[in-house]
Image (cartoon, rainbow, N blue to C red; front, side, top):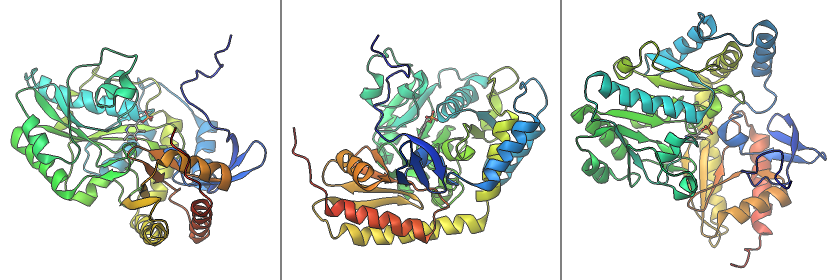
Length: 396
Ligand SMILES: *Cc1c(COP(=O)(O)O)cnc(C)c1O
């Protein structure tokens, strides 16, 4: 047998973390890495947050799991908190981002089918989007590398260029149920949608009674300096998928919706065995306690602006390597003029700096939201050293 016990779907690198220490990861052999990847925008409180650890420990010792057949004081409390802080009136808890998007897709379809409009099942989605790895969520993306080997796709998705309002408008037809969009594309290369695009989609949705569904799995939960990124655009969605940061490292996601949008989601229409169990709710509540307040969000904005200003200055020293900086808050991307993946590997292996590679030759900078000046300085030390001794690999 040559297949590995872990199904070999990830090309795993040599970094093998066994311990976290605030904003650092410590490898099996004791090497310390500065973690500006955060498990891909997950560990927003870093790796040793007392509030989060304590909440999980206490809940684990009290009650970890019960079925959703029983009443859930823990779920009600977190759902109420999210309803209080967002556009939403109701929440369905999941264990991952893809499941949150799945629930969002079902909610958008059910909105029309409940009203007897079964022909309105199609969601308009946007090129280079990433919505997860289930059959529905790979079908929602036009990226062929995720489709290969898994045909046929699920029907009911139409792909349009990202940030192209005219294209979106032209795609609306009798089968359209709504739009599914990341306000800031993550895997696609930290590409924020324009104001005009997001406002335009909202207006189109209003005009044609369509669902505006946001995938905020990566950009949500304080990452951009707002609790959710839609707040930057002065609009509200009908349905929103959130995950990644919301559990701070504990597997948790949620589908948020207005009362109107959730009209098709009655008893028996959807479910999840683990979704919203007391342990997950304790983690989610600890994260909300830490991030869902103006002081914390303002600090994310300030830190994001500080890093961005220094990055803009820094990339000017290497005009052959870097093109521009984009993003919002602490969701930043450095678009490179050369392939970004080998540079990301160089930073990781030669300078013990963890970032994330993304589409469009972009290097994702996604630090824990609790970084301080010391971590920011360390980041720039490592990045500067990494740029200074980088040798662009020969094209093969
Ligand atoms: C990561 C991600 C997902 C999928 O989340 P999983 O927890 O991996 O299922 C969906 N949408 C976006 C925008 C993401 O970044």
